[in-house]
Image (cartoon, rainbow, N blue to C red; front, side, top):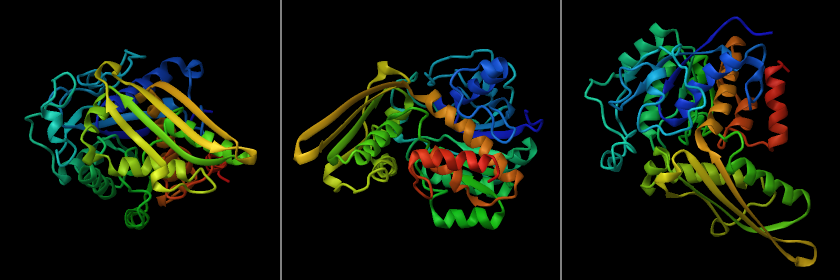
Length: 366
């Protein structure tokens, strides 16, 4: 039975992942039970159609001042357009501060591939908090570019001040940082994060293979996961200085799935190149080398090709609902039972099958 209460949600960063989320909400409303590929169609009475997008924040001149429905398809977004009727997505995109959300090299690349800063004056913290309160936002989801440490922390502070639950989709450590976790607990607000695992992406496939090897008694000696893509996320990450936490998040997600951790020299995980014509497609190359019974050699090679942003949006729709459920129950601080399944760098790493059961148990109130 669908809960009649809408989950009023604000989006920070109206890029490709946000585009897929915006499309996804309208898609699920239009198709209902016939929507394809929905993770957890119902959680404690909430469906993806119950998400109501009430505000957006961005810095790009082609998005600021537009509705979320219009901004979803504005350049440089290049993700698949799987649901184009977004007339109902009428919430406005507000001009947020730049901080470190925009890398210098992103302003010098071709216009249709990179950012162009809006000349509209940026909101300060008081302005963002005011928008959140006036919109009635209950949940904020962060989809800022990788490497946006200061910007992510700025919006985190705004969420706490405005009394809004947080879903942190990027590799800046908020839910998994004890200092920030304590701030949310003190404020009586839930927080989920950090850094989404995609619905069926490179990390979950890599973790599954590593777990399978351990289960079957195979000794893994070394492994890599190399990712290429053509969206703004990959262009942003071509500046390797922005990648430190992303590599840590992805690497720890795989290390945690192994019974024996590998030496740093034997594991390499992370984005490796930007290929413009791939657009929002991500191609991942995963290799594990190991030894079977008696030391006999074996290796596994996998090539995964996915549309990157819908892959994240599916899990975002689950995380937003879990944040609302946590609010409904008066929970505060990190929501570990949901974060372990949905994020690469949660407060506590749990094997994926167990994490799936934890999420369902949380939703069912156990």
